[in-house]
Image (cartoon, rainbow, N blue to C red; front, side):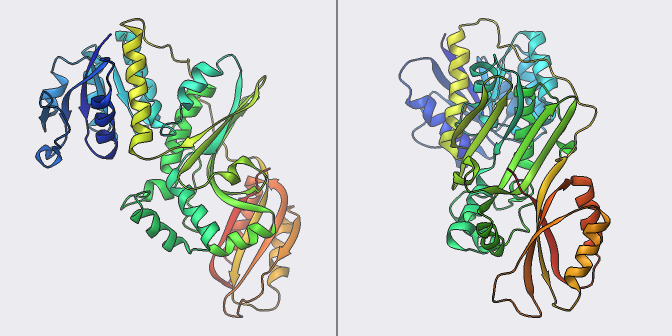
Length: 416
C-alpha cells in the first residue's frame, strides 16, 4: 500500500526523514506536505516540486494524506496535533520522546479506539530497533529489567573526559561544536532526555506506566576529570546509566551517573552510541546497540515505522501491551558507593566522616588519594560497602554540612 506523508518539522531529523523518503524507489512512500515555522528559509532544491511547503499546521492536518510524521518535539502543541490526526483516522509516526513518555498511554488508547497506529521507534535509541525488538523480537520472554546508555550527548561528553582527560566544560563545548549537544543541553545533562526514553521502554518492555517526574534523576554536571582517574584505580569508568526493574511488586528506577566495571558492556560504549540491555526471566540478557542520536539514524527508525504501516496494507494496527501504574517507584535499594570529596585539609576529617558512616551502619571499604593535591584543595575518595540508598542519602546530607568542603561531595552508585 503506497502512503502519502505529511511531515511536521524540517529540522535535522525532519530533513533526514524527507531525504530518505525522496530517495526511495519502491513507490511505498510519497512525501506530500512539509510543515515548519518560517518555512520559506527551510526550502531546499532536492525536495520534489510536487511537495507543498507550509507554515500553517491546518494545511497538513486537514489535507488528504495517509500518515502524519511529527518530528517537532515538545508536549504542546504536539499533543494536539497527534490527537487531531488520530481523530481523523490517520496513523502517526513520531520521534517525540517527551510526548510519548508523558502522554503515550492516552494517545495509544485513543488510537486503538479509532483503529490507527501511533508508532514511535525513533523516540528511543535513534536507529536502534529496540522498541520493535522488545515488543516483537523477545515478546515471548517475561522481562524483568531494562537498562543501558540512552543519551548519546552525555555518553560523548563522559567518554571524551575519560579518553582525553578533558574537564567537563571543555568536553561539553566540544560536543556542542561537533553537533552532539544542543545550545541548551539541560535535558541531556540533567537526565530528562534519558528518563523519558526509560519510561517508554518500561511501558513497552515491562508493562509499567511510569510518570517521568516520578523517576529519580541525577545530573552529570558534577563529574570531574579527577573522577575518571579514581574510577580507573577501581577498575571502573563512569557512564550515565538508566535502569528500571520490577520484581515482587517492587519497581526500582534511576537515571544518573554511576561507576561501571571496565568489564561491563556499558564501559565499552563510546561517543554518541547507545546500548540497551533487556533482562528476561527465561532468555536472560538481550542487548541492542548502535548510534542513538543524529538525523539519519533517527530518520531510519521513522521511515521503518512508515514502511511497517505501508506493508500492513490497511490491516489492524499493532497491539500494545496493557500497562499498570506502580504504586511507587524507588531508587536503588542497595548498592556500594563511590564518594569523592574536595576539602580544605585539616586534622580529623576522616574521623568525622567515619563517625557519620558508623551512625548509619555504613562500612568504609577503602580511602584513595592521588598525589598532587594542595592543603587548600585536596581531593580524595572513599568507597563504601553496599548499603541502602536511604542510609546513604541520610549520611550524605549530614556530610554536606561539615565545614571543610571546597566543592559539594559527589556520590555515585557502583554497579556490578
